[in-house]
Amino acid sequence: MRNIFTFLFLLIFLSCKEDVLPKPKAYLSLSYPEKKYENLKLQRPYTFDVLKNATLINEPNNWLTIKYPNLKASIDITYRPVENNITELLTEAEKLVFKHTVKAEQIIPKDFVNKNKRVFGSIYEITGNAASHIQFHVTDSTKNFIKGSLYFYAKPNYDSILPAVDYIKEDILRLVETLEWKNPS
Image (cartoon, rainbow, N blue to C red; front, top):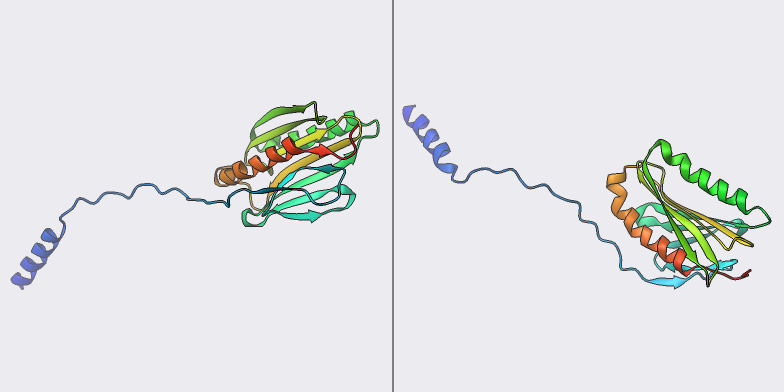
C-alpha cells in the first residue's frame, strides 16, 4: 500500500513540468464581404450607390428597405416630396433621432453639403444601446426629402454590434455622397 502512495506522489509531482498560465483573452474575429457597389436600379425620384450583396425591398411611395441578411440589419429609407413643408419634415426627422436619448450615450451630428448636386443633410451617429445607431436625412430643400435609419433585428448591445455598425456606416456615407435627384430643383 505504501508503494502505491509513493508511486502516486511521484506521478503527480513529476507530471507537472510547466507553470500553468491563464489563456489570453480571445477577441471575436469577424469578416465581412468585400464591398462592391452599383447604382440603384429601381425607379425612384432619387438614385445612389448601393452595396451589390445587399437585398433591396421595393416599398410603396418610393420608400426602400436595404437589407443585410447576414448581419440581421436594414437601412429603412422613407421618401417624401417637399410641398412647402420643409420645416415640418426636418423637425419630424430630428424628433425621431432624439427619441433615442433615453438609451443613447451620445448623439453625434455631422452635416453634409453638396451644392453641385443640391444634396443637403445630416447624419447622426447614436452610441449606446439605442434601437437605431445611425439616422440621416437629406433634401434638396425644394422638392425632395429622404430620411434613413439603420436598425438591427436583435436586442441592442452596442459593444457587440459596433463592427457591423461601422461596416454599414460606410454604405450610408456612400449612399449620401452619391445621391442624386432625378427631378432636380
